[in-house]
Structures are given as structure tokens and as C-alpha cells.
Length: 107
Length: 89
Image (tube, rainbow over all chains, first blue to last red; front, side, top):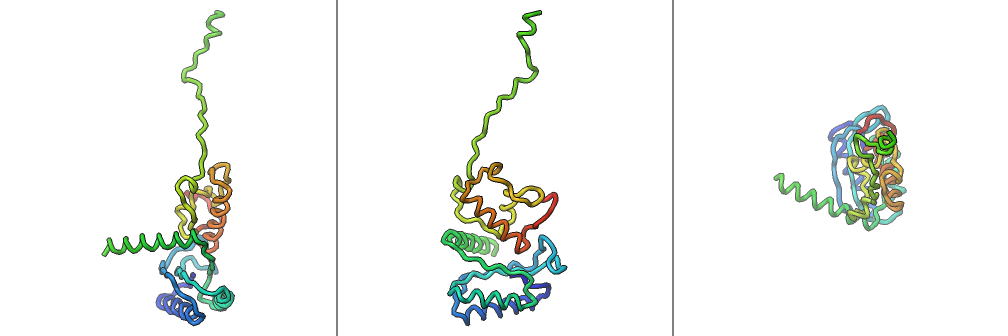
């Protein structure tokens, strides 16, 4: 979720992981690029990072594989995989709709 | 003189503390999921040092306190919130 400071490489890394998920037969429900954000505390002597959120659906066996690649990838300095319960799914749907509306108003 | 002592007058009326009933804000407003990605909301459950506030102070019910704790810990992990801080607010 948090690759290190480098611009186009961040996008590249994201697409790589999206491909990994798709190859594993996962459905990507939603994704959000937060862009460069300041970290609340330094991680590996870095004070900023790219945030990217991917919401996906698939078999649980993918997780181990995904986390392993995260660990091996030097670009990822921090990641978090979370299981969503029904409330969380409802929440993220609501959030998405809100965002869509905001974008519509802005454009 | 005796009258004087029996009739003590206060400059300000003695404050009678009316206990405000605490309530769980999640139960009240129907929030079912606490987002770890939203630091501004989580800030309400944390003191200036970034420590979790007890239920005794926030009035959160046990069920949601657990979720708050989980969310704060996740937020800390992804560096959306600090582990240690002073003057957060």
C-alpha cells in the first residue's frame, strides 16, 4: 500500500500488483490512489510515501502469496491486508458513492 | 450574631453537578464500521499523546471500543496516525 518515493514507478508497481491479483483469479472491486502523503512517523528514514488502496475479492490462498511479494519488494515499505466484514463492505460502498458524487460536482 | 452564621450566603450558587449521561456515539448514530483510513475521526478516541482513551471517558460501548482500538492500531501501522506524539490536538 505504501511504495517509496518515486513517481511513475509507483504507478508501475501498482499495475504489477493488480496484474498479480487478476492472475490469481481475484476480482478488483475498487481502487484508490491517495498519492504522495506525509507519514505520521518515519519509516526506513522516509517521511513521505505513496498510498494506494486496492479492494479485491478472491480466495484466501492469494493473501500469503501477495504478502510474500510485498515483503520481497523493496518499493513497498509498509502494507496492510484487511478482511472486510459486511459492515465494512457497506461502508466502503457508501464512501465510493460519496466520492463519485463529489467528483461529479467538481467536474 | 447567631442569625448571621446560620444564614451563609454564597457569592455564586453552589454548583449542583448534573451528571450528563454518557452515550455510545456509534450506537446513537448507527455507525457500524470504523474506518482506519480516517485519522480525523479516530482523533476523537485518542489523547494528545496519541494514546487510546478509556471507555470511561468516551462512553463508547465495549463492542465498539474494540473496533476503535483495532482501527487505531491499523492506522498507526500504515503511518496514518503516530504511535507516539505530543500535542496532537
